[in-house]
Image: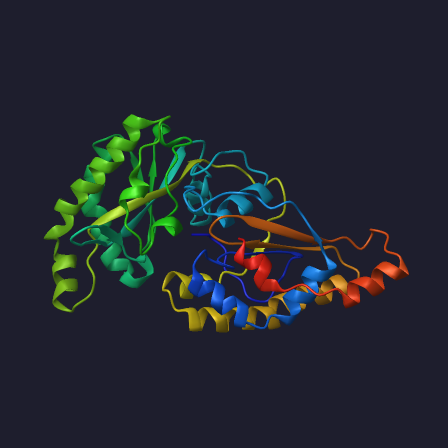
Length: 327
């Protein structure tokens, strides 16, 4: 999950996660969706080579695209988002390697274990801190430093987490977790340790008073955690893009009507403001991200454009759904 949230832009590079998904239902919504501002932008701006990938990468395209825009070095599943978030939470991250241990509900079914969206826990600070303290000994006994950052942000620090490849939380939410528990071949021992700690917390937290109270009121329990974003802190070497993440929640919830409404609003405000900025002579760029790949589009006011080219751009037509379905 990306740390920024945004609506109307405040910077000239906008990154949009969850712009599409590789399903026929999403494709149909996109074909019926009117996105006039995006259509104008795609017709006039320069398309950069797409960042190719697939649905099986540990890092979704929006996380990889943000990491590259920050000038980070790393690899799939090992971008240091935990250290970045911990620093933002006021934790002295130093030169330690950090991981984000998100408290979560693992729903055990007949054939799969699903990870519910942690946001649906509506975990308050008192509950989170009580569960965190209960889990502390399990982590510290294995040599981890532990820090509480927020109800859904627990942090672990240990040298073994340096560059440990883990599936992003955004890859796992509402999906069977088994395919995403594959060990990192470069750190198999640490991967096995994390898996053991996930199992231990299932037993440890089962009868915790916080969970017993949540069960009585029909709320989902916290019965494990998900580790992601491992690595040492890296400063941003370039300005961060502004991220408009309003498409995320409805797509993860498979609420395509709400997702379409969010796309319409985004087209009318964020993209309208971005296109207006470009029309006034400012440099601007847009990165669209799906589940398989991302693609960046740029407007450079210094690039020479003949009168004929300007006229051609005005009449050129691009169907957004064609591009979005390929992401």
